[in-house]
Length: 346
Image (tube, rainbow, N blue to C red):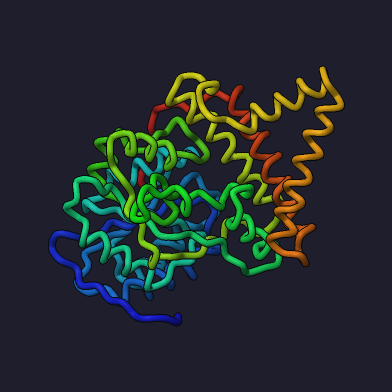
């Protein structure tokens, strides 16, 4: 790793429970645990534990985790959940954690030593702040193959869905109103007092929903620019578009939870899709004109991002919008998950 080196010495006030929720991640676990080991190497006197929820995996991920943790003498708790429900699993992590600070991180995050230490240092400084509920850093898409290199361009434009998720949602440059739980350090009791993660969101969106509640209650997420990590979010079009579908689905489901009716939320893709459909039926000429305008805007965006890869970026932009729209549309008809929690030790 290049750049300046930071270190951290824990006080009695700040110790961490590391929360890991996984589903069929056996191939990623060894490298992740090596990265975590390197990150902890710069931390002195930190009392930590690993709390892992196996989200109904069909592989040997739990056994691999036990082996990796045992070889390093790390304290480990593993519970098995019969349902692949992220809200339910993250809620369970909070309830099992014995420390006040919980660091959520996913196995598809490429953790580095500097990002972890910088989060800890910021948390130490703001531990007693009544306004701060969590600490987060930038999450940049990994660029290990050609597809991911193109996908990273979506973070540079608001057309791309991922672009403004963290960078532009700031209040005053020091805080954000949302950051994914794939790389997030939280105050356990604040999240539990807010009702914890909503288990009625079965696939994704559990972090966005609780952060809306926390922001409404006056809390903020402290932004730590030096805590940047890389995210192996998708390795091909199929994986990425499947995630876009889930993101769209979550938006509509969050609207149902918050308002009781998705129509009261800003489900822009649904409204735009419906508008184009009605326009096409009543005024075909104007519908074609609107679609042409959209195509021109997306084309110009793709060209401005990279003149050599514009075709691949164009496919990603249009595909992202289309599958996000399909997800929001499916959320209108799909019922929310049940509230019962079912976990067991393994």
